[in-house]
Length: 78
Image (cartoon, rainbow, N blue to C red; front, side, top):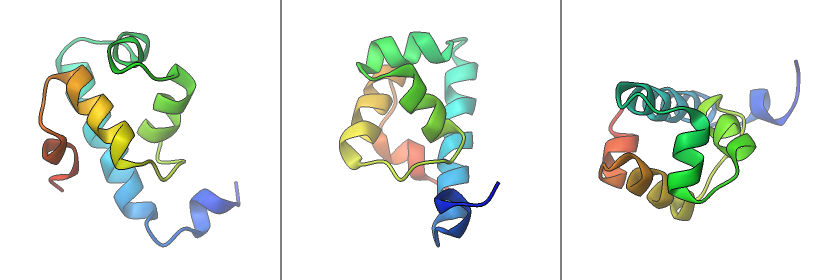
C-alpha cells in the first residue's frame, strides 16, 4: 500500500507511538473500544493511531494518556 502513511518522514515515530499505546492498552486488558470510550475518541481513529496511519495531535495524546491512566510523556518515551 502506497500513500501518505508510507511517504511521511515520521513513519518510524508514528509506528513506535502506536506500538506503545497498544502495548499499554493490552497491558491493562483494555480493548480499543474500552480505551476509545475512556478517552472520548472514535475507535476507528484510535485504530489508525495504533497502526501508525495518522499524525495525531497533543490533544489526542493527552486524551489517550488519561484513558490509560499514564502520563502523556509515557506514550512517547521511545
